[in-house]
Image 1 (cartoon, rainbow over the protein chains, first blue to last red):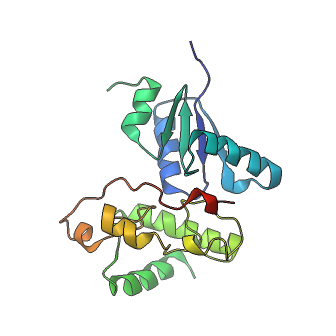
Image 2: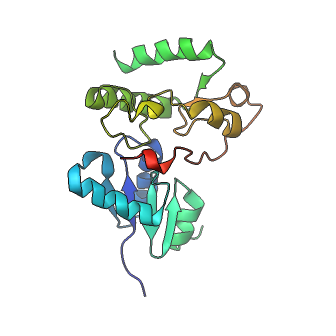
Length: 86
Length: 109
Protein backbone atom coordinates (compact mmCIF):
# COMPACT_ATOMS: atom_id res chain seq x y z
CA UNK A 1 0.00 0.00 0.00
CA UNK A 2 1.23 3.44 -0.91
CA UNK A 3 1.08 5.47 2.29
CA UNK A 4 2.95 8.60 1.20
CA UNK A 5 1.29 11.88 2.12
CA UNK A 6 -0.28 14.03 -0.60
CA UNK A 7 2.02 16.77 -1.84
CA UNK A 8 0.60 20.18 -2.71
CA UNK A 9 2.58 22.61 -4.85
CA UNK A 10 1.04 26.03 -4.28
CA UNK A 11 1.43 29.80 -4.36
CA UNK A 12 0.82 31.83 -1.21
CA UNK A 13 -1.39 34.32 -3.09
CA UNK A 14 -3.42 31.94 -5.28
CA UNK A 15 -7.14 31.58 -4.56
CA UNK A 16 -7.36 28.09 -6.06
CA UNK A 17 -4.42 26.99 -3.90
CA UNK A 18 -6.13 28.36 -0.79
CA UNK A 19 -9.34 26.51 -1.67
CA UNK A 20 -7.34 23.30 -2.13
CA UNK A 21 -5.66 23.70 1.25
CA UNK A 22 -9.03 24.33 2.88
CA UNK A 23 -10.44 21.20 1.27
CA UNK A 24 -7.54 19.06 2.50
CA UNK A 25 -7.81 20.58 5.98
CA UNK A 26 -11.59 20.07 6.07
CA UNK A 27 -11.06 16.43 5.09
CA UNK A 28 -8.53 16.06 7.93
CA UNK A 29 -5.90 14.92 5.47
CA UNK A 30 -2.25 15.11 6.43
CA UNK A 31 -0.25 16.53 3.56
CA UNK A 32 2.97 18.26 2.70
CA UNK A 33 3.02 21.52 0.82
CA UNK A 34 5.35 24.09 -0.61
CA UNK A 35 4.60 27.68 -1.57
CA UNK A 36 6.84 28.18 -4.55
CA UNK A 37 6.63 31.99 -4.60
CA UNK A 38 8.43 32.02 -1.25
CA UNK A 39 11.42 30.08 -2.64
CA UNK A 40 14.52 31.46 -4.32
CA UNK A 41 17.52 30.28 -6.30
CA UNK A 42 18.40 26.60 -6.57
CA UNK A 43 15.63 25.49 -4.23
CA UNK A 44 13.05 27.17 -6.47
CA UNK A 45 14.60 25.72 -9.64
CA UNK A 46 14.57 22.20 -8.21
CA UNK A 47 10.93 22.42 -7.13
CA UNK A 48 9.93 23.82 -10.55
CA UNK A 49 11.55 20.81 -12.20
CA UNK A 50 9.60 18.50 -9.86
CA UNK A 51 6.35 20.27 -10.75
CA UNK A 52 7.06 20.21 -14.50
CA UNK A 53 7.62 16.45 -14.31
CA UNK A 54 4.09 16.10 -12.86
CA UNK A 55 2.39 18.94 -14.76
CA UNK A 56 4.21 20.24 -17.84
CA UNK A 57 2.23 23.52 -17.73
CA UNK A 58 3.68 24.15 -14.27
CA UNK A 59 0.46 25.71 -13.00
CA UNK A 60 -0.87 25.94 -9.47
CA UNK A 61 -2.11 24.17 -7.51
CA UNK A 62 -0.55 20.89 -8.60
CA UNK A 63 -1.41 18.08 -6.23
CA UNK A 64 0.10 14.61 -6.11
CA UNK A 65 -1.99 12.06 -4.27
CA UNK A 66 -0.38 8.62 -4.39
CA UNK A 67 0.02 8.04 -8.16
CA UNK A 68 -2.56 10.63 -9.20
CA UNK A 69 -1.67 14.16 -10.25
CA UNK A 70 -4.46 16.74 -10.15
CA UNK A 71 -4.01 20.21 -11.62
CA UNK A 72 -6.25 22.94 -10.25
CA UNK A 73 -8.86 22.98 -7.53
CA UNK A 74 -10.95 20.03 -8.62
CA UNK A 75 -12.85 19.02 -5.52
CA UNK A 76 -14.38 15.80 -6.85
CA UNK A 77 -11.12 14.53 -8.34
CA UNK A 78 -9.18 15.36 -5.19
CA UNK A 79 -11.70 13.58 -2.97
CA UNK A 80 -11.76 10.58 -5.30
CA UNK A 81 -7.96 10.33 -5.22
CA UNK A 82 -8.06 10.54 -1.43
CA UNK A 83 -10.62 7.73 -1.36
CA UNK A 84 -13.25 9.99 0.18
CA UNK A 85 -16.77 9.06 -0.83
CA UNK A 86 -19.79 11.16 0.02
CA UNK B 1 -3.88 52.39 -2.23
CA UNK B 2 -5.95 50.20 0.06
CA UNK B 3 -8.09 47.30 -1.08
CA UNK B 4 -11.37 49.25 -1.00
CA UNK B 5 -9.88 52.02 -3.14
CA UNK B 6 -8.49 49.47 -5.59
CA UNK B 7 -11.88 47.76 -5.74
CA UNK B 8 -13.69 51.00 -6.53
CA UNK B 9 -11.11 52.15 -9.11
CA UNK B 10 -11.04 48.83 -10.98
CA UNK B 11 -14.81 48.36 -10.80
CA UNK B 12 -15.29 51.67 -12.57
CA UNK B 13 -12.57 51.23 -15.19
CA UNK B 14 -13.36 47.59 -16.01
CA UNK B 15 -17.14 47.89 -16.08
CA UNK B 16 -16.68 50.62 -18.68
CA UNK B 17 -15.14 47.83 -20.82
CA UNK B 18 -17.99 45.41 -20.12
CA UNK B 19 -15.90 43.33 -17.69
CA UNK B 20 -17.16 42.69 -14.17
CA UNK B 21 -15.85 41.54 -10.82
CA UNK B 22 -16.88 38.09 -9.71
CA UNK B 23 -20.01 38.23 -7.52
CA UNK B 24 -18.10 36.34 -4.81
CA UNK B 25 -16.92 39.48 -3.03
CA UNK B 26 -14.81 37.57 -0.50
CA UNK B 27 -12.87 36.02 -3.38
CA UNK B 28 -12.52 39.40 -5.09
CA UNK B 29 -11.17 41.09 -1.96
CA UNK B 30 -8.81 38.20 -1.26
CA UNK B 31 -7.42 38.48 -4.80
CA UNK B 32 -7.17 42.28 -4.62
CA UNK B 33 -5.22 41.96 -1.36
CA UNK B 34 -2.88 39.54 -3.13
CA UNK B 35 -2.47 42.01 -6.00
CA UNK B 36 -1.47 44.73 -3.51
CA UNK B 37 0.91 42.26 -1.84
CA UNK B 38 2.47 41.46 -5.21
CA UNK B 39 2.80 45.17 -5.99
CA UNK B 40 4.77 45.55 -2.73
CA UNK B 41 6.79 42.42 -3.45
CA UNK B 42 7.58 42.82 -7.16
CA UNK B 43 6.72 46.43 -7.92
CA UNK B 44 3.80 45.45 -10.15
CA UNK B 45 0.50 43.67 -9.71
CA UNK B 46 1.47 40.22 -10.90
CA UNK B 47 -1.34 37.69 -11.22
CA UNK B 48 -1.81 36.05 -7.80
CA UNK B 49 -2.47 32.64 -9.34
CA UNK B 50 0.74 32.53 -11.37
CA UNK B 51 4.39 32.37 -10.45
CA UNK B 52 6.05 35.72 -11.06
CA UNK B 53 9.81 36.02 -11.46
CA UNK B 54 10.43 39.59 -10.21
CA UNK B 55 11.31 40.81 -13.72
CA UNK B 56 8.66 43.18 -15.06
CA UNK B 57 9.61 42.56 -18.69
CA UNK B 58 9.39 38.76 -18.34
CA UNK B 59 6.19 39.00 -16.32
CA UNK B 60 4.46 41.61 -18.48
CA UNK B 61 1.96 39.06 -19.81
CA UNK B 62 0.75 38.27 -16.27
CA UNK B 63 0.45 41.80 -14.91
CA UNK B 64 -3.20 42.12 -13.98
CA UNK B 65 -5.29 42.38 -16.09
CA UNK B 66 -3.20 39.74 -17.83
CA UNK B 67 -3.09 39.26 -21.60
CA UNK B 68 -4.94 35.95 -21.15
CA UNK B 69 -7.97 37.58 -19.54
CA UNK B 70 -9.76 38.40 -22.77
CA UNK B 71 -9.60 34.93 -24.38
CA UNK B 72 -10.42 33.30 -21.03
CA UNK B 73 -13.47 35.52 -20.52
CA UNK B 74 -14.62 34.73 -24.01
CA UNK B 75 -14.08 30.96 -23.77
CA UNK B 76 -14.75 30.22 -20.10
CA UNK B 77 -16.67 33.24 -18.77
CA UNK B 78 -14.00 34.12 -16.20
CA UNK B 79 -10.32 34.93 -15.99
CA UNK B 80 -7.84 32.34 -14.71
CA UNK B 81 -8.04 33.59 -11.09
CA UNK B 82 -11.77 34.14 -11.13
CA UNK B 83 -11.37 37.84 -10.31
CA UNK B 84 -13.19 38.98 -13.45
CA UNK B 85 -16.17 37.53 -15.24
CA UNK B 86 -17.80 38.24 -18.58
CA UNK B 87 -20.94 40.32 -18.98
CA UNK B 88 -22.95 37.17 -19.76
CA UNK B 89 -21.84 35.54 -16.49
CA UNK B 90 -22.45 38.78 -14.59
CA UNK B 91 -25.99 38.89 -15.98
CA UNK B 92 -26.56 35.19 -15.09
CA UNK B 93 -26.85 34.32 -18.78
CA UNK B 94 -23.85 31.99 -18.69
CA UNK B 95 -21.95 29.93 -16.13
CA UNK B 96 -18.25 29.97 -15.36
CA UNK B 97 -16.40 26.94 -16.66
CA UNK B 98 -13.14 25.60 -15.25
CA UNK B 99 -10.39 27.86 -16.59
CA UNK B 100 -7.23 25.97 -17.51
CA UNK B 101 -3.85 27.73 -17.65
CA UNK B 102 -3.08 29.04 -21.12
CA UNK B 103 0.21 30.80 -20.33
CA UNK B 104 3.01 28.96 -22.12
CA UNK B 105 5.17 27.15 -19.52
CA UNK B 106 8.36 28.45 -21.19
CA UNK B 107 7.54 31.85 -19.73
CA UNK B 108 7.93 30.62 -16.17
CA UNK B 109 11.36 31.33 -14.78
